[in-house]
Length: 359
Ligand SMILES: NC(=O)c1ccc[n+]([C@@H]2O[C@H](COP(=O)([O-])OP(=O)(O)OC[C@H]3O[C@@H](n4cnc5c(N)ncnc54)[C@H](O)[C@@H]3O)[C@@H](O)[C@H]2O)c1
Ligand SMILES: [Zn+2]
Image (cartoon, rainbow, N blue to C red; front, side, top):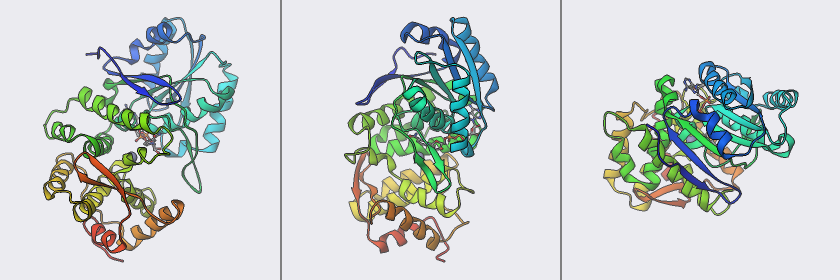
């Protein structure tokens, strides 16, 4: 089933559609040739484990009269590096992609961030289309125009704001995505429900999930926030960081092993929810609702491989970057976020909810 109409993202620098449906990859050639006035040379930058999806896109493009070249990216976060960026830019030049050409990013957030960055700087910017194949990339990383790579000194330290020309989220690709990656994406969906739409949370309580509806609603929520604050200047976009203050600290304290990002966010949302109950009047039942959803979707509620002291240290590092204060996203009620500073003793108490060991 294909949707009749896309979700529209209206960022200040570009407006574009997000198509969500099954079978979009095989229809890509005709869709691109009809709507965008592109030249014939197209680079398909693809996660190297997604061979059959890449070949499907390549065939569709060739049939529609394009001249596609596939540029493979090794899977994993390690590919968001200066060296992979350099290789990719050189391959784009060798492949003779020109100003009228386009770059298609096929994969999860890793390929989307790396290839999006490359598209934004190659020939001072060429047309970019995101073809997200993970739930996280569909509901989060492909939307909103943040691109970038990591440095040894930290994650996402180099990058650009560069909105794509269009996004095609083919739900069929979710059929091969490992269960743990699905759950990690669901943590971000739960985040959208917590900050903007309790009804979305209710749809996650059922046993069969309606991906079309879930991805669509999530993209709508992210699009609305991005439309108000494309470059994270007004503070509005910061609400997307619900669960991420403690979540990022956990990931850093664990050396980016043990937990995948969505699992860290799930734990971080428990911390932020308890803080919201204590400081912003969020109801007890909201916390119970979150916990039920985490259990239902196999997301963690506690973590053992770390101590509270380590997480506090990681929070301090984060705090230095933000000039002295962690800005927590808390909730006054479900769907009503607010930015707040949190007293130290409250942080310690809330962390105890997810981490047993003090030292
Ligand atoms: N730009 C943004 O706004 C933004 C937002 C959130 C996260 N991110 C970034 O996104 C990245 C994480 O993205 P991710 O979780 O998609 O990770 P990922 O791209 O590493 O994909 C996860 C794993 O799934 C595999 N995979 C991808 N699609 C598949 C499919 N359809 N079937 C089977 N396997 C598949 C990949 O090879 C990889 O092993 C991080 O680098 C993070 O910084 C960016
Ligand atoms: Zn996240």
